Structure formats: structure tokens, C-alpha cells
Image (cartoon, rainbow, N blue to C red):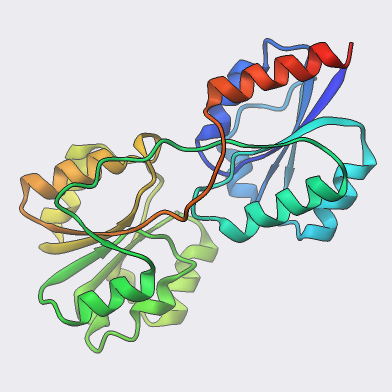
Length: 253
């Protein structure tokens, strides 16, 4: 049976795995953490899940260990460095590289900024409570805001690492919302009301990341939205990647 190497960590790979289950192909799926592994289906004969962050050298070693048909990159659209490493390793291993793109969202009425640092600068000039939903890894940009301990609330994954990271930066337990998304419009509205939020900072995670529900909730409550824009990238839809995998399978017969 042919083998495929898939890098995930988002909800995209869940849908793609369902498609690949019908193909005569065994999938090795790499996710960054044990938490990400927990959110995936049980490992079967055709699915092997590896948890842990890999650098470019480790990726290349993995790609050279087995005769993979191709490499599919379904990592988060903002994980630029990870995608660059996967692509470079695939090129070095002489394997086809397929980037799965998440559909972009309509962001009308939002303030679009190129980075979390720019979002923090906008917040420095604003007033009122803020909900940060960009994840725990880039929160250090926001602690430069002079009154961040009072104004800012952060929504992060419910892992010990995420919570400890927030605490280490100076956020108190009462300002840390540790929950697993995506969230419905109603739940977003409840949180915005609960903490009297005036501005929400987010990334365009697409429909599968709950982005439209965030915008609708904010719009209904007249909450300003700052969106950290997506990095530019090229890739394929799930349907296009499925077709390419079928083509590669046919070519290898």
C-alpha cells in the first residue's frame, strides 16, 4: 500500500482524512502536540499519528525513512515558518509538496493589520476591555500596552502550557479563558457580554476556525474587530489535493 505524509494541526486534516480513508493509501499524520493528537480519530491500520514539533532536519529524516507518495501540508495558515520547513524538506527529499489552503473570509468592517505588533499599537490608542483570540504564542506583543492587566482578556487552548504561558506574561487567572474552539456566535456573544468587551483581536481562521461566528457576534454587539491579516501563500483546495493524490496513485501503479 502506498504511503502519504500529512502535516496537520488544524481542522482541515480532519476532513481530508475522511476523504483519504476511501483511498488505497496509508497516512502518517504529524501534529505538533499530544493535545492535537487527542482531537483526532482513533489510530487505525491506515492511519499513524506522530505528536511533537519537528524541525526541518527531522522532517527530512522522516521523509527519507519511508517511500512516501507525497507530502501534504495542512498546518495553520499563519504557521509560515512550519510550512516553509515542510516545503524545504519535501524539496530536499524530492517529494511532491501539496499545500492545503483554508478559504479566506469576508472581513468587511474590520480593522486589518499586518501583525500582532500592529494590533497592539492600535489597542494602545483605544479604550475599553479587549478580547485577544490570536493564541498564546504571540501574546508578548500585547503586554507592552500599559494597562494590559486590567483591559485585556485572552482566549487560549485549554492546555497547561497555554495557561502557564499567559501567567508568565502577567495575565491573571481571571483574565484567561481556556477553551477549545471553534465557538458558536451565541457563545462568542456571551463571552463578549460577560467581560464587557469593546474590541476583539483575531486572525482569519476561516469558517472551520469559527471566524464568521466571531464577526457576527461582534457586529451584533457593536464590538470593534482587529484582524491580523493572513500571510500570502499558494496552494490548493481539498478537492484539488484529493484529485492530485489520485493522479499520483495512478501514476505509481
